[in-house]
Each structure stands twice: as C-alpha cells, then as structure tokens.
Image (cartoon, rainbow, N blue to C red; front, top):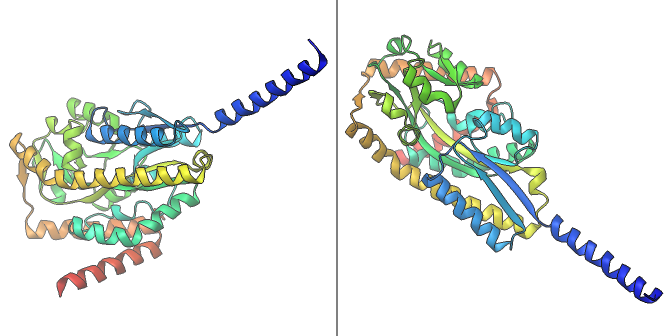
Amino acid sequence: MSFSRQRHLVVLLVVAAILIGTFVAAQTTFKVATVSPDGSAWMRDLRRSTGLIEAQTEGRVKFRIYPGGVMGDDRAVLRKMRARQLHGGILQTGALETVSSAVQLYNLPMYFRDFDEVTKVRKEMDHILIQDLADHGFEAFGFAGVGFANAMSSKAGTAIADARRLKVWAPKGDSGAVRLLDAFGIVPIPLSLVDVLAGLQTGLIDTVAAPPTAAIVLQWHTQLDYILDLPFMYIYSVFMLDARQFSRLSPEDQKLTRETFGSFLSRVEQRNYADHNQALNALERQGLTVLQPTDAEFAEWRAAAARAATAWVESEILLVEHVQQLEETVARYRESTAK
C-alpha cells in the first residue's frame, strides 16, 4: 500500500472515530424508578410519553423504566439518584424532606378545602417548589396531585383518642410524618411503602392514611374495614431527573422533554382527581364503612393539625416565609370565592 493510501486510510479511520464518538455522546439514557405498579394507568402513560420522546429525538434520548418498587421505596430511589445509579424518579414529596425545604408545602395537614383551591394555589406557587429542587440539583417537570388522604383502618374510630389506640403507619424515614403524628399524640409504626401491605396482612399495623385511589392500586383496601370521612392531607408526587444528566441534552431535546413530561403529569393529575370520588364509592361498594366525626371531634383534629404545621416550621421542614406566602395566597382565593 502506498504512503498516500495509508495516509488516506488513517484520515478516514480518524474521521469515523470522531463521528462514532459524537453519535455515542449524543445518546443519553435515563434510568427512572417508581413504586407505581407496571400496567397501571400511570405506567402506561409514562411509557407512551418516554416512547414519544425517544421517537421525536431519533434515539438521542432514551429511558429505562423500573416500576413497581423494584428499586426500593422513594427514599431508596433518591439515594440511588444521588449515587448516580439512577437518574430519575416519580417520588412522593415526603421522601424529599432532606432535599428541599419547600417541596412539602402543600402537605400541610387539613389545610386545603378542595381540589379547586389546590389548583388555584399551585398555579401561583409551583414555580417556587420547582426552583428549590433545581437549586439542589434536580430537574423537576412538575407535580401530579394524587388526592386527599383519608385515614383507613381495620378498626373503627373517629376521634383523636381512638387513633391513639391504633397501630398507625408512617413512611419509614419520614421525620415530617413522625412530627405530624406526634402533634396528634400518635406514636406511629414506620414501614417502607412497599412493606405496608404485608404489615396490614400480619397485623403489624392496622391503620394507614392514603388517597382512596392509592389504597386501591396498592391493594391496601383488601385489609381495611373503615374509612374516616376527613380529608387529612393533600398528597402529590414529583417527577424529576438528575440535573447533571439532563444538562447533557441539547436545548431542543430539553424543551421537548419538559413539554412532554409536563403534559404527562397534567393528564395523570386530571385522571387522579376524576378517579378520587369514584374510588371512595368503590371502597364503600367493597365493604368499607365510612365514619363521620362529630363537630367536636373535627375541631379537635383541626387544632392538632395547626400544631403540626407549627412543628414543621420549627423543625425547618418548611420555611416560615413559604408558609406565610401560602396562607396569603389561600386567603386571597377564599376571599374572591366568597363574594
């Protein structure tokens, strides 16, 4: 082979190596975990959304989804994200207490009256929570409301005194939940989300607080007999990716991903809200008895909820300025609807 041909071959090999390297670098795969069961409406919609992104980016952005808690509960997923073993997750906000002092703001107990009120407040305040997550290294696409959590138990009870005699579940590692229950004088039994069903089956716990839709999807309702007609807390999840991994995408692919997942979360939330009352009715049809607290019992629950909110601020789970802004936003909304 002549020298000129050798040189030409070397140039071709170098160019090919550069092109291949560029192509490989342009492909970014996100490993994303969730406790949502495979085959659920959440998962079907998520897979459609990730498939759309993969198709429209021509394979530059790919996703590997781990459903059903196979990567552990939300706190385990967060640890693996920090270790870069995972790049994203759909997490309940209670798992992010050590990450953000804003993200649990809407979890204040017995705070919101209905979904309309939550929606109005979130339009004004979601950006604060999202920015706080960004400041801590996460690209959040938004939140999906799951619904209002109700207390459900295998034993009857409507007063706080009744609850103090029950075996009440709290998410393992969630100090906010522990402080909240402490304000009610309740000593909880901590368990990971994936262990709750087994805990109910064995009698380790007999009481949970969860949105009706979640209780059905996770099959908890099969071990329960009573539901307290008292919306205890607004529950919502966040979909977020590691910001370092996300920054590898081109601006165009970032925009597409944000828009696609934003739409996904909006659809999920609308479906959850529509399913909420249907799930309550379904629980009744499946034999759960709805218990009504008296006015005096309700007032006692409200007073304890206010103490819990104060405890969250004092322990810096929430910042006082965020709570004040929330109070002002809610007050404006209630004033406008009272006219």
